[in-house]
Every structure is written in C-alpha cells, then in structure tokens.
Image 1 (tube, rainbow, N blue to C red):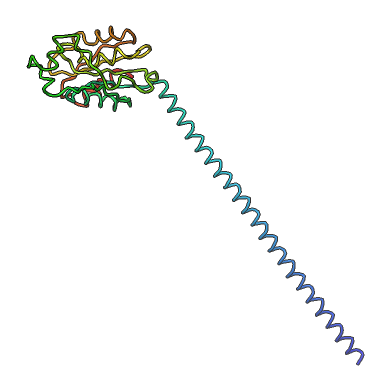
Image 2: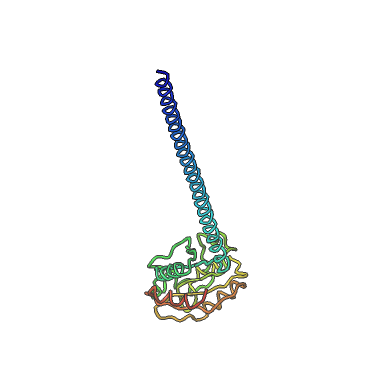
Length: 240
C-alpha cells in the first residue's frame, strides 16, 4: 500500500512539472509574439515618420522651386523691361496693329482718344470743308484736346511703341498732344504707322523733335489691312 501511494504521488509530481513547463513555454511564446508585434509597430511608426519627413521635404522643395521660378520670372521681366503700346486710331487699322504688337511683346495698351472724336465726315480728306482738311490748312487748329495723356506707371516702361495713321505725310496730329505732354527720357521709342499708300515721311523725326527726349528708332509702315504674321515678324526682328 505504501509503495502504491509513493508511486501515485510520484506520478502527480511528474504531471505537475510537465504542466508548469507547458505554461511557462506558452507565456514565453506570448511574450515573444507581443515583443515582435511591438517591434513591428515601432518600425512601422518609424517608417511612417520617415515617409512623412520625406513628404514634408518634397513639399518644401516644391515650394522653394515655385518661389525660385517666380523670382526668375520677375528677374526676366526686369531685364526685359516693360513695354507700352500707345496708339491713335481713326478707323481701326492702327488699333489692330497695336493689338498685335501688344500680344507679341506682352505689353500694355494705351489708346489716345480725342475729347471730340473724329467722325467719318470729319475724316473725309477729299472734302476741303471737313475737319481734317480745315485743320491741315490751319496748323493752329491742330491742338487736339485728349481725354487723357497720363499713363499709369509711365516711369516703369522702358520701351514705348507709338502708333498712328499718316495724314498728309505726317503723324495724325492727335498724337502730337500726347507726345508733347510726356517725358520720354530713358525710353526706347519705336514708331509704327498705317497708311494705304503714304510713306513715313518725316513723321517720326517730327515727333522726336516735339518730344525732345527719348531714344527714337526708325519707324515701320503697315498697310491698312496688315496681317498679324507681318506685324509679329517685324516685332521679333527688333530683338526686344
């Protein structure tokens, strides 16, 4: 009986030790899995942080590139200088050419407008009693009052195109009032004019004398129905 009891207790002890070892092994495996998961989480968080930093750096780089691009554009505009296209158009022909020039150069437009606008009857040069005929015959009547001779930020323009129709071999006199009222010091002035057949004559030289300042260039004639391609080709040849 004693031997049986001892044997039974021995078996219980063995079973107890086995169960305890199994429990410890499970706990160890669970701890390992937990540590592994924690490690993976830390690594993932670290990777996410690195990705976030990379995105931040990319955004900063993009912002810096955009800023640099804007500065380059500003520098280019400064080097090239601003362009102004001033024009007087009686019938719309000079206005069309002025628009082509402004488009080709990225320049601004300024239209010269007489307070008393010329009508079709006023412009009938074949009628000796028409307004232009009377003004042509009486030079003291060519002082045409304009709506405005003031260009906003005038001093910021380096190149000024001056456009007008030819009247009796000279610039249409509404242009005189504008030229006389402004200071062209430091500006490159490029005349252009429209006519059916008349040549430039002394129109550019007379305007330069009237202005008294500015670097006046040789002018360019365009026919009344000038094409955009002709105008753009001329502008590109100026090397602005």
